[in-house]
Length: 232
Image (tube, rainbow, N blue to C red):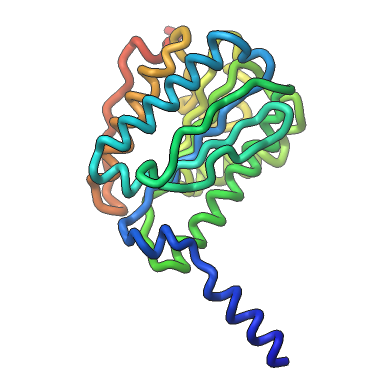
């Protein structure tokens, strides 16, 4: 019995040291990025540059650098957490490489579960947090079953548990992404490969969130016409 008690007490004490060292409120953000073979060449190069630009911009913002809790997950040959949740002040942008198909369904499930796990870690450490953000960026459509993913995502959006943005690149099936999310107004077509402009807007939005108080209602600046294509 004493051994079981000791094991339990040990597990109870395991808390992310970064959360204890930095008591600032957190805004958890996941970049869920399509790295399938169709992203080969300029698309993956531009995406890499955009992600690096996002890290650099957030790092230059005193509050965002310690409040935005950023994770990068790639889906291609498999679903891979390239960067677990961490502030940009304590992490580096990962390098994206192409491989495999487009297991978007599995990726969305992993992302949503990781968000819930991270929120529990915040609560354990006594850290307040903003509503999580989830970005799905793809140039295609899922090659796996998305039933569970769609149900979980729509429930999270409706329950205001996540702020979702779906970004379609080049030949992405925008309508399919809208169906999966159930929120067509949150799915956009990227204008060309303007990842840098996209992530500049993301950085600006997250900086605004970081300088607010948890629970505040914000009106974020709309992205420019250079970022998204709009059908009229």
